[in-house]
Amino acid sequence: MLVLPSSYPVDAVFGVSGGGSTARRAIEETLNGSLVGIVNIRGVVASAEDIPAIAMANGFGIPCVVCSPRKKTGEQFADELLAITKQFGANVWLQYGWMPITPAKFIIKFREEGGISLNQHPVTLDPGYPDLGGIGMHSDRALAAAIYYAKKTGVMETEATCHLVEPEVDRGAVVRRLVCPIYPDDDVKSFKKRHILEEHELQMDALQALATGTMETLTRETRFLIPGTKWLLDEAKAVAEILFRNG
Image 1: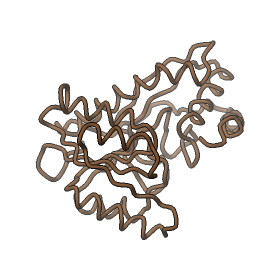
Image 2: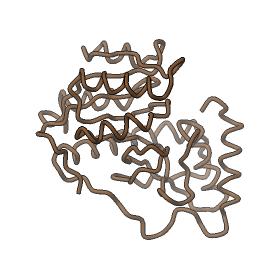
Image 3: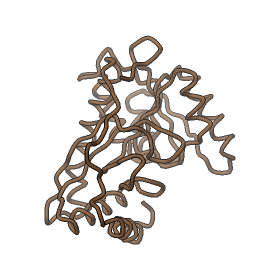
């Protein structure tokens, strides 16, 4: 079972790259909801200067800084992230729609200093086995791959996921997951409209579990990949990459 080595409540910093809808939900929950008194939002890190999440954070009076990997080495990017989280006094790093690949140096050093890093992933992960994660599998592209695979196999569901951040993308242990139905007439737009709300609920549940010392890593009795369908999973990812070249 995972318990922060430092004292509660959780002091969190969000990494965001878009509108920051999950970060917004978390901020609202700390003001008037399930996270009141157990989670403090110390700051927001935006991966670019022109994303809507900056205005969102400013609207709540949450400090926001821009930290882009552009024109930086991995080590420089890691050092900047470490300096920012230290400045904010964070013991939890939350990747809510964070698009850059987080440097291994940051992940390892932040953990060595007593921190925990969590990532929001929209669909099913099965770390160590073929699944819907990996480099480039995020946002609409991940949803498209999940829908394609579900419709081709007839297993009409996917999972919203919260997992530990590790140097290898999407390979960290899953700590929360929620089965979400995919309907026969779903496309990315229709599925995303209701699925984002499911994702929000799952991430808030994960934060509450972390803050109360009840978070645990999860195992899976049955592998995600249906035997004999690795080719289909690869096809689903390839089609999704064509449909959503920018993620």
